[in-house]
Length: 394
Image (tube, rainbow, N blue to C red; front, top):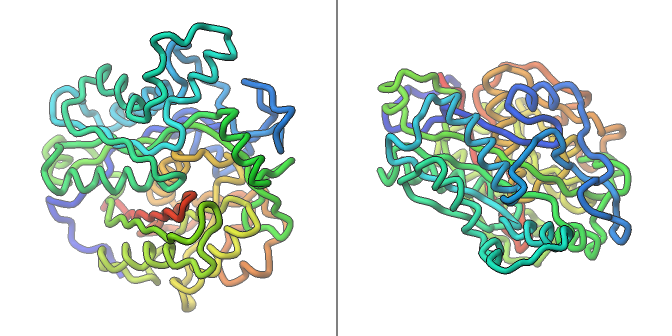
């Protein structure tokens, strides 16, 4: 089915920015995730002797201001790229900022303690909202600011919130996405849950053993199609619909029937008037944990029944799990898939789990396919689930 006729009120993407363990910048990131680059490695930032793994997706090739939390530096770096691509002066309009995160700026307090410094005056970094404070000031933002702490589904939730701000007229444009940095707190949490893989993250593989923490940021510039047309900037993609849900089942385990994920996937299709058969790619949550992947495959197979199934992959096998930034970074992957026709693959997938056989997993490093729609899904602790559906930017 062809894309519907464009409307001036459509919410569109005009810029992308990304900081990831496999590359800083959209071009480097896109090349890495379609050539099988695995960015998980032995952690250099802090000792990991007491934890369930020594490896993570750590950002190493980026020089940042040491007086600021790394997460803030990631936001500023990704924002600069996204705004540059969108050719948008953030101080010239009502530009807002919506970010999803798990830890926010709190890991900076750990870093200050490791340095042996004095924490006097630094307690503000314990508050999640400070993730947006420095970027808003430096960029001269005058639009609404929001920080969403809905666990690892937060990046998608921030994108949906930002799209709502555009549709309602609360902002002329929004920077939206997510950011998180590695921390010993996150290592301790996943160690206590026995959820960490020791050597590699293998989404949907028979021998998957868990996840690895990661860090980074993904940001999109959202505005109305009318605004993009007036400014004469290319449209990369359209944000067709977003949805969120709560399973209210368990603090860490997914709902055994996947009710929240099913609701989100079917809701974004219904809200956008998109047929399931027309979705060409699904960026799965795909943590590489035994419980998540088989459940996710089951739900996706039920939503996308029939001979025309979307290609499915999880880039967490390459990046690790970037917490609240994960779905934001994966949204950039969706937009690259729409704009380039190259879908990221599954380089750590050696033996697909037979329990996941009813979805079309991308085996190998990539798949070339011209697609019109891409779905990004995410889960978080406490039963939070979110989804965002993107359309080609025709």
